[in-house]
Length: 448
Image 1 (cartoon, helix red, strand yellow):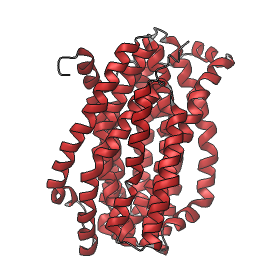
Image 2: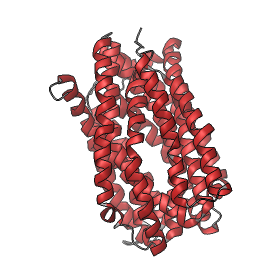
Image 3: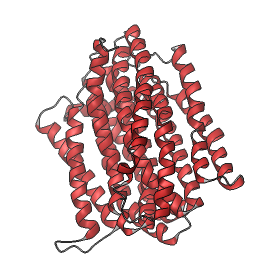
Image 4: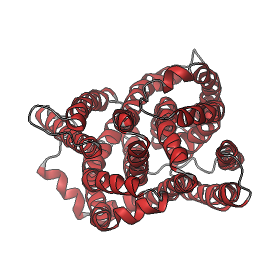
């Protein structure tokens, strides 16, 4: 493996994506950490609000990931001019999808928060958080579309730089707006929301301005809009986008359903999950970069009709990612006290429960890494989105979610075992994804 030049190339692509993904995940963690001194209700409200945003963001990621897959194959086939047209069409699709969601969020945020908590203060704080942050999903959509297109042409450091600047701005604005100062009164949870939205807008403006000023290969010109006149281009992207957005949506709604169940158990349990999900997200971000880089390289090989090379990379990464994840999960458990130390203001009961759940997160994270690598890194590189949708639906909605509901409310098991049962989804997915990768039906050239 270590002597494989394609592996070294892929890992070179992977580390900036991993680092950026960690920073993006850390962004939601920052909001939770920096309101922790306001109490469990603030932690629960921001955590639950972020899960609502996560549902929308993951659906957007399905759109941007489709752009990345198609762009990688266009790049491998030497059709770079089609990437800019694909970006424009994807932005149009994102506006069509997001505007109704933003309008609905304005009227239904309180009802959605009420599904996940019975605490009136949590509901009120979460509603405010969603009102302010939901419109910024449009900024996120455009950012992700450009970022995935950049990665598809092996330019992974540009998104990393602008993401890092946005994170720094968000931290500064969080501290200022949450606690007040310089003529601004303390805004609390609303301050965290405004800081997140402003930093996202800044990131979008800075990224697009850079691409245009540098006359980058992805800078948009008037001639690129001619791409919109060809109906086939809209249909090709839509054929990838719809099953992928639906698949990502099914999965993200399922993740939100888990959080609704935990919130109904109690505010303490919801606060614990709100603390630990970003920690798990940062851990998985490392392997998200590896899966993304694998998808790029495999997609480029498929676009160039280099099927043997695509299969070779698929085999290597289906082994490499889970092995590294198992080792890193053990390290995460060893240093759990350090990871939980930034959360100030939480009760001792919340801290003890968080520590016990932490062992599950660190010990079983490798299962999610296997499925991330097989699905996002390999199967989706060939556009095999319908099978991924089928697998997510069966394993999450027909097996895991019913079992978690029964464990929480019918069998009334402890919260520790409720969380353990949630991982039945990952065990189920391993068998289905591994079988699909092995039969090679996902190996398709999408550019022809």
